Length: 297
Image (cartoon, rainbow, N blue to C red; front, side, top):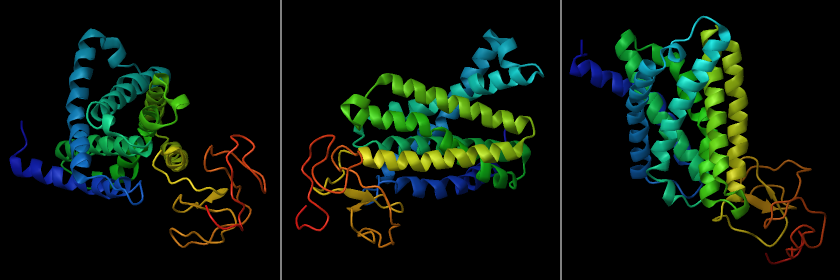
């Protein structure tokens, strides 16, 4: 029986709550260059629509491979099911939502991470609405906000970063295999997360999300370093851990966000992003670097 229109609308509006918080965060991954809401909305909508593609695919697969899509009680059977028929299928359609829409307009690697997260949020929002309608219990959002909505963003990180790098990163990093590897990693962690929950190991699922969050932060920093739009100074630099801006090697506070910088941070060449010594040119790429106390740069 189809839910009445007011109930459906209420479910969709409630499910938007968790997604809007993350949308604002993801849209600002590029400080000073926030994405237009039009493109963000497009990918968000395609991510939501991809849930229907997932349902169609799993239904069709269930008719062709009933034993695979209806696993037995064995933990290994369940793990295979969650990795392949849940993780791989869902992550593939989320990837297509980005690849077939805004991918060719990427200008820097961080856009891959951002739009992967946006597509994942669209998918999670549509899922949240379905859960509210089926269970008729809005409080289900609390658990899904903390675990599932957050998890969908982090699980898409691997293929999102790969899309950004293969489109706009250094030429030696533009390998199609990188996207396939990222998709496989996303499917694996997605399936493992669901498997943990099915086994009743909620703490293991939360720990997995914590690890993925740290990897996500590392990926955002690496994507910022690889950006072709990043201003390259002529002096050896350090990276502010708070806002990822490049600052002088001898700086004690960040000129972008104003926060104090910890001492002992490694300096690196702004041209090749490899560690450099105290003075002189970069020993790796030969870039002429201005010394910390000298004018210019």
